[in-house]
Length: 140
Image (cartoon, rainbow, N blue to C red):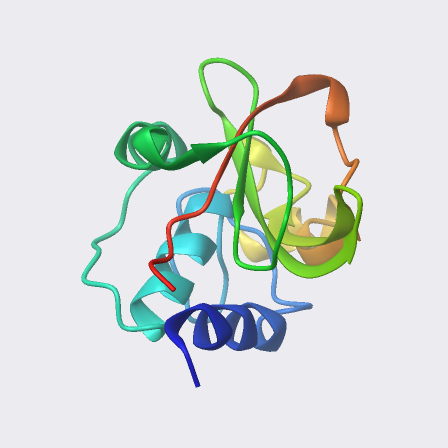
């Protein structure tokens, strides 16, 4: 299994876990904590980073559109949210996965459940109007 495939498999196994602001797993995640944990599971030597750090780290790997699973989607400028592609259907369309739904308001598990904040999937046009960058961090 390639690192890209391991990354995607790890992400899929996290579906349903709660979103907690600042969490990096394994019981709960925020958006960047989820991506960093999946990258480590895929064999990348990466620490825990916030969205803005990851945005800066991968800026040189920016691409113009979604073309395959494993690519990272950054939202807003400066970047304040991110997700990853797990299925690509063609023509810039597919499925994204991410920890979302709460931001700083979800600082404990009860608040996360109350806010319906968890790791889930959305279509690739999610927040299309605030998408700031797509990157492909993989070397395959």
